[in-house]
Length: 297
Ligand code: PMM
Image (cartoon, rainbow, N blue to C red):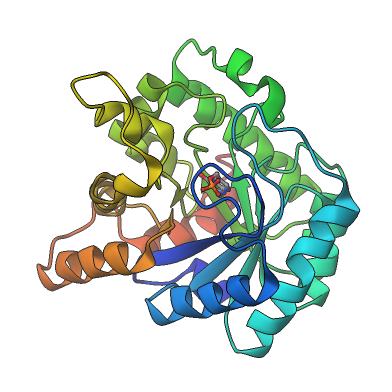
């Protein structure tokens, strides 16, 4: 999977929430067969990774226990991996990540960036798998109160750099690390737009960057009707495609989306157009080693 981290083309990660209550697709894939069918469809639509999550992280959500989370994701991961689908496990619990890797997952997508479970770095280091470290300030229940920044881009950059330092100190290889600004996690709509506009400042950290805007509420707010009501989640696809494309054009390594086909089509157009990235992914992927060699971090 090191190849995936250094992939020359943008990586599309398809979202597969095996939860009864996620904000966009909650309940649709809670049944194991439905989840497996959808995971295979995401791969066939062009997802290089299918991101399986068993705990909703929508703002205000209560936590579930590790057993419930594992029971939701493991049968799905086992089947998908058996069908040749590359799976990432979306969890902030080391135990769940470890079991998911044993079941065939190949990437850990940790929305807490290693903060929620101090054992996660060991699990990832021992597995030698890629680790997505997302910017995070606290669990869903209280995260709205944590959306205070002097300068959201500078603060997210500093906090992500701290997560990287800690991961490296724990023995995780630099070339396994992918960063994510964590749109919507302790962020207002304004924060999300600022992070989008100033993505190169985060790319400057020297790690591949994953961008997860898909169907999030700030897109619904942007597209609110004359009555002021947010556009429903299922009708935010064009906005998702547009913002994902902007991120990739700015140099993002990958995008995490619900409707893989729409985004994959848009990226095919972008590639065919020959539009350059501000930063080539290959350069982004190889930067950590260089930066470390020069003692920059
Ligand atoms: N967003 C959600 C869940 N997991 N993982 C990463 N790396 N980045 C994200 O932005 C992200 C995530 C919440 O969205 P969902 O409920 O649609 O899964």
